[in-house]
Image (cartoon, rainbow, N blue to C red):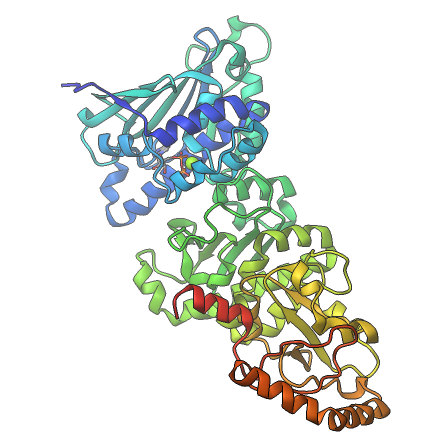
Length: 563
Ligand code: ADP
Ligand code: MG
């Protein structure tokens, strides 16, 4: 029996649907990208499951996507013969949003349509984008391997609920029928449809077929529908770099990253030799909403000899590069490779260090050639990159060259100063990189510690990110120049100080010995020591941390966690 039931969408789906319909209007054709992307994912999953269970291919070993329209009925149909869905999977996938952190994400929505539209794009709208152009959507699907009678029909008007029932379906896979809104009939037009499909499908590795279009009048139309493949249908990363257009790289990115916007940069490489693999790595244009969530998916899409194996293979890049998206296609791994095997395979380690280097090189190039794009990168991912020196000791010099800081050279708190630029501006005789950490820019900017540096015109980096002190505890030097925290210990300005200055300081220290004794007596146990200082020009006194003492930021963090 059909066992028809009506179910309500999860609250978050209702919110998403409402917002999408009202805010995605200027970009409505993206629904086709999303549906094609899903059909392609479903085919990848089938190919993967068929490695162990070839019978899943049934009598249809050729996998592809067909898209057609009916101008009279004003419908658009997208059909794949991929993995399909069982009844439970339909309810789960097309009734809820399974992503972790969804509820928290939804709370960020402001009600301001423009802002929310970009947030939604960042979240990924997927299947539900069908409702941008359709006022009714039907899904017919059968999971590969299940009986024909276990097909499922899902239907919804995209308001509060959907119906689901069992129907017979002979072919495995999914057919989605969009009943277009009257105003969106353009998508039922054969030529218009063809243009949009082409735009979103050239990077898809399986054939996408459309009905052959016939010029002239309808009498010439053959009785049988003729199909025609409109895309290249070869995996984009297998093509030569020179043959792939920027737009194709960009569309492919949107497919693998589930992003709406273009990437900042990419790096496409074929490696031959002992290990053979191809990688295509992207730097996204913005941070995902769950960048700092531990359980957020990360990693690359793994293929073995063009066969999709898994999403989110996290073994190929270190944690501090978790924002990188892309694919890696290996010629050496077994088709049966699992996450456990990846973890133990020494070949993966050498791929990981090579891919890490590729990413760092790509960022270096971006910083050199497109500083504005790099600034965008830094705003989005700088704090994540700062985890690098601690996690990846071997590359810390390279990572350090990519860091950007606020500095006394600048009039505001923007993090734009790189260490190379700092070194170029160093004073005659300066051999150290000076920095000051604190909680807020306005506080460090006015710190008395800076007085002597201002007077001498020496640049000081101003570090106020929560992670900065921890970062600096893993960076001792860069290009042979030691980092010095100017709030610590005795400040030795080395050659920056004239000899007569030093003499004057020693004399002053002797002259003030009595005063120091008296202050010590008064302050008693509150401080460890009192010294005559030459680092102040205006302020009478300053608190200093011992050379090996814990920094203020660290102290605060530990206090906050109750230690
Ligand atoms: P995403 O693709 O990011 O997972 P979507 O909203 O696009 O999110 O799709 C939700 C889920 O619905 C998919 O993860 C998949 O499990 C399922 N799905 C969507 N379209 C298809 C399809 N054509 N065939 C099989 N499963 C599908
Ligand atoms: Mg999708």
